Image (cartoon, rainbow, N blue to C red; front, side, top):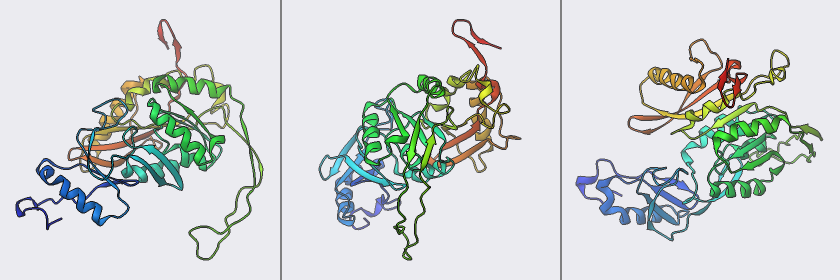
Length: 343
């Protein structure tokens, strides 16, 4: 790259890009726009798997509510139908019509690792399934929703493609209402999946041909309550939390201390500012969550509450995931459709 750029433009040479299948996604700074076609051609020459190079020309979500963006093609065909692999799952989608961020793969893996086989998870803004499909591969039931019809279509296709249809229920609806309708419907659901044993086979990554042990055949019954809710829409997800008020009103007997079932964990993504220790951001995020729930939450003294630093998205902007157990005072609060909340 140094060979094609003038000496005056070599302080911050644009060498980084996001690869989404065969597409290289650039976000060039203004000073490099005059050299964008040269940069794209060099990138293609040095990366044989890349067939198309694009440059983002607006912010994600600026064009519409589906977190898509406008782009210009710098090299190769205008073909954004891609296939990517993550956590042993194959995803196919039109990158121009849905949201996907390769830089979130570590976060997807971190959260899915917390789900246990036999649990039920509500993925409120599921996209094409980066949380849903790996969880379903673990025999976790996932009710997966996205408002974007294109994301929904890809989610359905990817569910079939990865052979996890027994564990995934896809929806295309508004997230606010989906939180309540899915919770109510699961309470009345009676669903079982017969597990079939598979013969032991060598692990793909093992040179010693170590056998992989699969669970014995049996029947797995879907629970009637979600163990986790995922709200992955960082710009506005916190505003969806008011939908949890009274979501389990009248069903107190299903949960601890009446049974061993705990109220669900909520994982809500958000943006905030940046600081060295994130303390100010933690206070701000807790305050915003408390305002939506109508109940005071704070990280101090709550062992189950975690505010995870996901990644930096801009010089003064950071993405977080706030995880907390839904308080009983919120979940069981009586709600009157006409009068509002009844204490």
